[in-house]
Length: 443
Image (cartoon, helix red, strand yellow):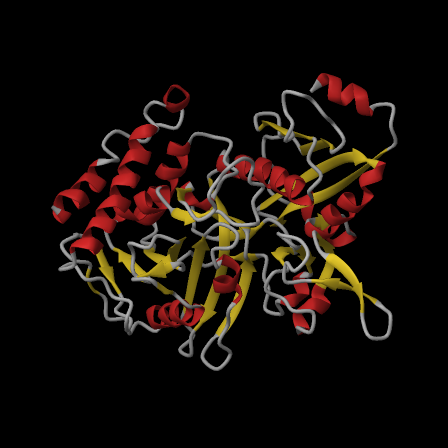
């Protein structure tokens, strides 16, 4: 790292400052340094996070102080080293410093900043959340606040940004990065803009006018000779855009009401579209063992099958502290704040693709309080919402075998943490017992 810093000292660089956290309850200042050749990345940084304005300077000056320094992100995309052909990312959360070397993609700098901000939040009685947060106001004035946790490509943004104006007033916090206050259950967004995939946006969509910048997209000429971007991942994988905050008119930066429900978004073919987790210990365990698939949003290196099910705890691969601390934090949230828990399978079940209307319709059923959940076979603490052609058959040996395999993989994951990294990520004693109980019930 010292050599990398020395190497850049004789080159022209750009620096900038932004705010991370959009409420006086939690605001940090972040500094970015990059070679001048990567001015576009600096621009993306200013557009994605909150740049300094008179309004936000005043808010920051009056914000709650934390015994921590500013965030510092240093990058040199041109750095090369034979030992690290795919780049190198170093984090020192104790001193709020990240060094990103040999990596050009803007997302690396965004997530590096969020990694440091989440670590600071975690140290100050917040839960770090890689997911989406929204709030419904029902016809009787009651509010329903929900969080959906999932990796990019899992349906997280679709679920978060969906709205039904004929039934509810919906306000949006964010679809990617926020924190939950342990004390009162309130939530705060960390960034104003949205870093979205362009895969699902044809050029004629109204949404495109909210694109501020784009990455990994092609450029072509339209019928009058003007340059236009090529979306839908036709030319490149992982097309991306920094999308304006204005795309969501009902956007807020802070929700003072406590969270009502957590939804773990998975792509586990052994689970029906919607499972309710009433056992509070299992609620945290299923977040711990969140099963999903990789997507083009990730920088996948090597011979990796993107269709293989992987476990990404709490949908957050950006954790810089012990996994057990997140497990305990979510368990405490479920217990202390009476937060409900659901699992959403957005992948396949019984060989059929679960469509967005299945998922979004089920969520509305839950919000309206009319969901008729039935027991999930012999498993205590779990029930599911019946949906035509998408229901489990516990009389079918093949289905039970697939469910047992899924639970066995969860057990293996929990037990593996006792050995990895000298047990740094070990879970509290007895965490695996709840999964063993499920396996015993399945026979």
